Length: 266
Image (cartoon, rainbow, N blue to C red; front, side, top):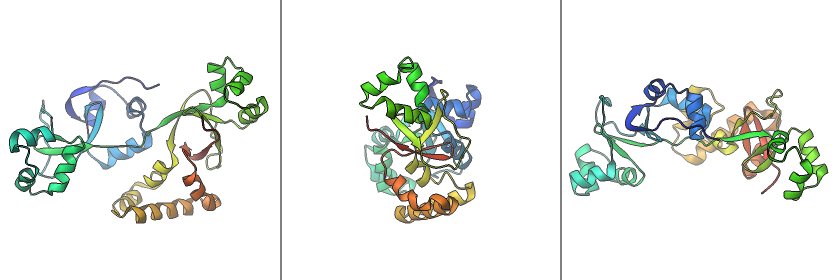
């Protein structure tokens, strides 16, 4: 369950927001359902802003620095272009020396006009709570594994085998750990953040910050993905031949250092 944190009617720097409302980055990530590690990396790499319930980043460099002031008044970019340029995206682009295709895309995708700069939504990988199957059965089925199996079309023996293997419960399905990168990882009733393995891998979140930034700047998606796969395989040689299969499996998860494969499709 996501915890409620304050929404804001003003545009605020994310660090200022966290300090002002006394919210930790972990609490923010849990409330927004986003991957904590990705958020912490983003805070170090980008100047992020909060408006309403969403994150934004500064997508333009029209002025040397973005000064929000005490009460910045945000408006949607599309509304600003409509009122100030009669809806003429090209006129806006010419005034600011920008690309009209970018301007149209920014206006169509929820861009904001704040302090003479364009802010765009900043998307981070979603995270999903994963608990042990045992704890899920205890809390939702009064510890009745037989009833759980009956409702999900699985034998009591199958459910028992899953429990013995410390299976996880996430997004309404059963997961099993397929790697042993983190031998101390144990699922319990306390939810751990699970992120799609493809989001983790192709976001480069396994790399040191400097190397991740270098790879991420490659605009060629195929080349970038190929490089990230190679680097991941070099780090985890024992499982290198299996990585492509884990990518191909639907909804494979990364949980605190290990890969979990979905065992059901409910």
